[in-house]
Amino acid sequence: MRRWNGWGDDSVTYSIPASATRFLENLIGPGIPPKENSLQEVLTSVPTSHIPNHPLVSTNPVSRLLHARGQSFVDWIELRGGRISTFPQGVACPETDDAVVELIDYARKANIHIIPYGGGTSVVGHIDPIATDTPTLTIDMSRMNRLINLDAHSLLATFGAGVSGPDLEAQLRAQGYMLGHYPQSFEYSTLGGWVATRSSGQQSLRYGRIEKLFAGGKMETPLGRLEMPAFPASAAGPDIREMVLGSEGRLGILTEACIRITPIPEREDFHAVFFPDFEHGIEAVRQILASGLSLCMLRLSTTNETITTLALAGHENLIGGLERLLAMRGLGSNKCMLLLGFSGKSSLVRTNRGEALNIIAKQGGVHVGKTFGEQWHKNRFRTPYLRNSLWEMGYAVDTLETATDWSKTPLMVEAIETALRSALGELDERIHVFTHLSHVYPYGSSVYVTYLFRLAKDPDESLHRWRALKSAASQAIIANGGTISHQHGVGIDHRPYLSAEKGPLGMAAISGLCRQFDPYGMMNPGKLVA
Image (tube, rainbow, N blue to C red):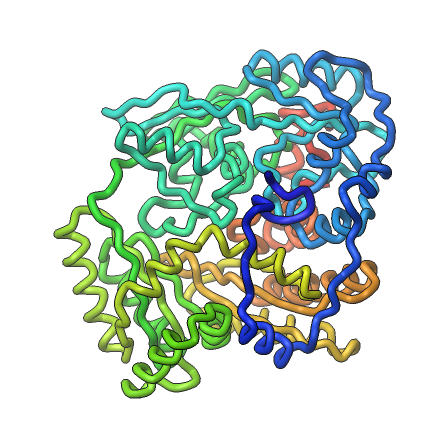
C-alpha cells in the first residue's frame, strides 16, 4: 500500500548501514527523530465538506487527505505533523473525457477551483489547495490510463494522460516499444504530469525531455476542448503544444497525450568511471558530447557526492577494494564518479563505448566496469525511499536543480553549495551538500543539488530552516544566470523567482494565456503565476 505521509510503497524500506549513520553524525551531528501524528489523528483535522453533491465527486475524508499534499518538504512537515490547513472539498476520478467535461462544468457553476492530480509526486506544491474562501475539487486522472492507439509506422502512441510510468512502459513493451522517460518519480508520476511540468528523464540524452516526446493530444478547458494534432514538424505559427507544456494545470486538464516512441533497444549497458577531480570529469563529458557519440546517459558527481554515494552504499569490502584500486591508479580524495549509459544495437554500443572510454582515458579517467553502473540502474527508483529512513532518524533531505551553459556550470555548483552551507550559520547548524550533473547538452548542463540538514524538535523551526536554505539557493541560482527549474516545474515554491527569468512582459504573456483558456480563474490557482 502507498504511504500516506511519505514516499512510495509502505512495504519498501531503505536500510541505512551503521557506517552510513556514523558518517552522517560526523558531518552534521546526531539526528533527533521527530514526533509524528498517526493517520487517524490527522483525519480528525479534515473539515466537513459543503460542496454540492455530484455523482462523480467523493467527499470522503480519507480520499481528501490523500489528495491534499504532494512530496515537497513543506508537504511532509504538514502531513507528518498533522498541520494541514487546506484540503480539497472533494475528489473525483473520471474515466472518460466526457466525465472531465462534466466535472469542469459542475465546478464552474458551483464556483469551485479545480486541481488536476496525476501521481501526487510534485515537490514544489503543484497539487496543494491554496488558502481561499473558494472550495477546491481535486480531479484524479489515474483511471484514464489505457493505451488508446499505437501507430507502429509513425512511432506514435496515444495514452490516457493519467497513465503512470510503469504502466505506460509495460503497455508499450508488450508490443516491442518504449518511451524511455524515467524521472526519479517514475514509480508513481504520470504522463500528464510530465507534460504539465516539462519533466526530464534520467536517460534524456538519448530519448529526450518530455517536450521532445510529447507530440500532441487533447486538453479539456473551461472554454472547451483544445485538440493538438501530432505533426512531424510544422511552420504554422506558434506551437499550441508548447503552450500546454509546463502549463501546470492552469489552462485545463490534459486527457490524452500522443507520444513519440522507439523500438526496444537490442542492448543497454551502464558503466562507471572515476576521474582525478570534477574538472577533468566535466571536460570529458563535454568532449564526448562534442564528438557526436550516441549515449543514453552521462551523470557526473562532484567529489562530495562521490564520497557520499560510496559511504551510503554499505558493502564495505567492495568499496574498500575499489578505493585501493583507484589509489593504485593515482586517484585520491578529490576523485569523482561518472555513470555512462549506452543503448541500441550491440555493435553500436560497443563502438560508442570504446570511443567514449578513449576520451575518458585522455582526461585521466579510470574505467571500473559495469558493477556500479548496473547497481545504480537496478536501484534508481529505490533511492527516494532513503528520504523516509533519514526523516525517521531526524534528518531532512531535499533537492533543487537548475541548468546553465558550460562556461557557468562550475561557478553555479560552487555558488549554490556555498549558499546552502552558510544559510544556517546563525543557528550553528551544519549542512551536507552534494551535486551531480544529471542531464547534459552540447551547450550546457543541469545542476542537481542534494542537501541534508537536521530536523528540529519544533516543526515550525524545521520549516524555518528549510525556507532559509531554499531561499539562499534560489537567490544564488538567479544571481548566477540559471533557470529556477530544469525539471521540477514552478508550482508554489518557485513562483517568487520566475519573474527574474521571464521578465515583466513574459510574465504578463503567461498570465494572459491563463486567462484566455480559463477566464473564470478556476484552474489550479496560485501555481506558476498569481
